[in-house]
Image 1 (cartoon, one colour):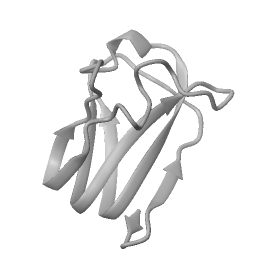
Image 2 (image 1 turned 60 degrees about the vertical axis):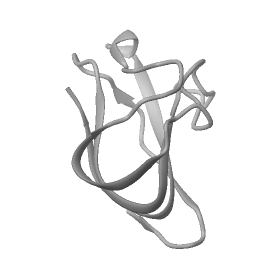
Image 3 (image 1 turned 90 degrees about the vertical axis):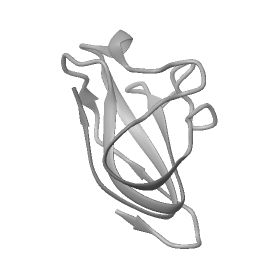
Image 4 (image 1 turned 45 degrees about the vertical axis):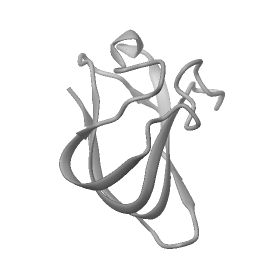
Amino acid sequence: MDAGKEPGTVLTKPLVIPSGDQLWINARSVGHIRVGVLNEEGQTLPGYSSEYSVSFTGDSLEHPVRWKEKHGIHELRGKTVRLRFHLQDASLYSFRVR
């Protein structure tokens, strides 16, 4: 997914968080990438809002996504969530949980 100067968002289909502690992204950004985690109804989970997401800038094959109050997603294991990626001047190639 790519976004230029105009910010854009990508919302995933519902997915179950497998065993794993961390969300990783393969991305390149001169702007920013932030991630929010939502429940099945589309409500942001406490502590996982995109506003609390630590903005990513750079180029990485494997960058850990972090939030100001949460450093991983271990507490979401087995739960169905949706991820909302906010991009500006950025490309998101893939994401995974491990």
